[in-house]
Length: 127
Length: 127
Image (cartoon, each protein chain N blue to C red):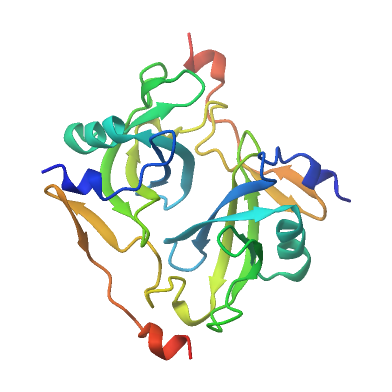
């Protein structure tokens, strides 16, 4: 049953990049990382679990904010070295800035311009 | 005018990961990499240009296959260390296997299962 985990060519740190997409809006939410345990747990529990590179530990998305991600689908690319997660984003907020997703800055005429609103202030989310 | 390029914290190899999404279908096509020159050229030319890590050179997507990508939108995430490109995929084929996108394998009951058809055989694309 763990053959599918062995097919992923884990990098030198034992990680794989994970693109997470919102199932209903189709918007790309985040790019994060998983180790073997995080991918196995995401598949088994149906809730997104990543590897926090800064905190060096498993990170169940939403454990502090309540904005969990229900896994709808897990895909892997042709080289099997990138994972694509389709999720239902609880609360509609994936970014720590309180926005729907992390890609809220758009290139316009030589500058990055903020285009997406803060849905909930971080001070309200992380108490 | 190049301040926006300086805002990207290029990694030790001078690269940034780039998620490319199809503008019309909303499907995630690929995860690739850009250096400073590739990002500048993608913005200036309106055609996606990446950095090939295997060939160690600029790689204009579609230069061999004819499947160019017309840049619709360029976004950057909250940390400005991931780029999201929204493109019109010429020919509807982004993957070197001849499929619409690279994420054609889906996790099902402990295995990766191919779900998306080959639109055009690679031998027909790369002559």
